[in-house]
Image (cartoon, rainbow, N blue to C red):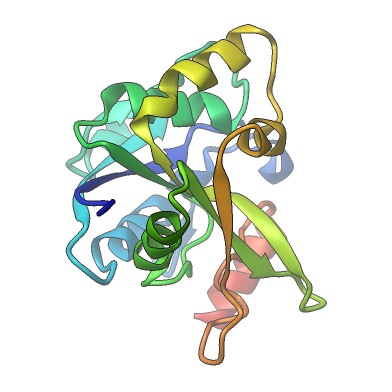
Length: 207
């Protein structure tokens, strides 16, 4: 099972509640939007698996369209969470697999797609997600960094329509594999995300 090609989806459809309700993907880091940083990171992915990129956003669609990519709102109303963004991406993907990444983690690994795909191929899994270290160095699930078969759209749609919202619960119901990004040379900040203005400022200082 060779996972190629893959479409990528940048998740920028959240409320930004912990950042005062602002649109996180449009907040500036080093003079450029977080979304632009994340898209650069996607385009630099190692290997030849990546076919195309698109954006999931629910506000300021015109601003996101200036990135030159298709922009798709959530498949369900009222900001139901990242799984709704997943579903929007699955419904508009042209490839058999979809990679998802959030807009507020501009340092994610350049080999993210390659390592997730290799693990899914090795295990015959339908979904692969990242494990990254927290501030104490303990590995934590990073479920929005996810590679999944587009055939999972029906399962995800049924879960959401049934009232489900918890990303970990839905992932656990699938044949999945978790991939640790804690090898020598891996950036311990790779999955750091800017949920608050203070965290965004910390990223600015670290650039």
